[in-house]
Length: 390
Image 1 (cartoon, rainbow, N blue to C red):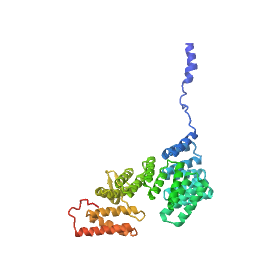
Image 2: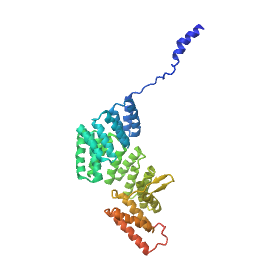
Image 3: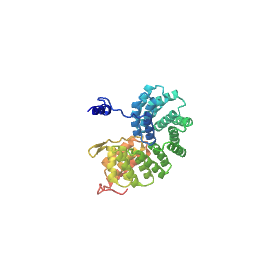
Image 4: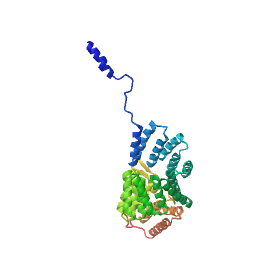
């Protein structure tokens, strides 16, 4: 009995956990999280990178560099509102941090909020005039302003800023990317391709870069390479409808209307409630001579409607800012006129004439719609619901 008591005291009791005290667990080093987040970012897995950065921020909440790394990943993931919150937190910790202001400007640029973006980027450059990445973000901002307004001053300064970014930070992804973007905007597309390729060499897993390169190839008529780039972009981010949307346009350009319709349909599957994507699909179906399906999709785009009694498509508005939207309207009305549904076609033609009077192609087609309807009145069609051959 004495031996048993001694054994329990010496061997058993020390191995019993103390009540109400947590069992010790291994603590992961913050550096390992950072390594993991950077690897995920380099692999193009931006959402996963953000999640890991959030864990690092939880461990080191007072480190502004971690907030900024997370904000950059959030921008690449398209989480612009979240990136603004993250940069705000970084600025609370370090109000004069040039990169915090620069990243804030880039997020605002991506959101199309140019005025506050300009304030932030100018503050970033005031704090550090040699911040090459900030100059790259400024070039992006100016380039987007040029697209929106056509301002000659914006594109002139954008060219200069892209050059400064390149000179100060030519090994950075943003400097190469901004230089390529501005070269593309100024119609120096061959040079733009080389800069896009240089940026992709720095990080080959960013879908937006492949979209930009594919767009440049497409304008130059290098359609096979354009499709390759869009396919890569789609591989990295299958939920983004743009690679399929742009691929449909490429196939249309080279007369492959069946493929164009297939790509357009896939884009709609990514975002079923987007009227722009449905309008694009409708145009491709029209080119493929599937008029009934084209009418269905174009009607959803222009008039709106329900899908599967659960999803609502809001009608798209006619505007002069995008010629493709006008194409949705006149294509729809042309089909309606050709199947003698002029009661629906004529109001659309009148809307085009009053809504986009400077769009010569749209106006020409609106007048053609009116002519077809006048001809229908003179020569009624026996079976107006049939589908004629265009």
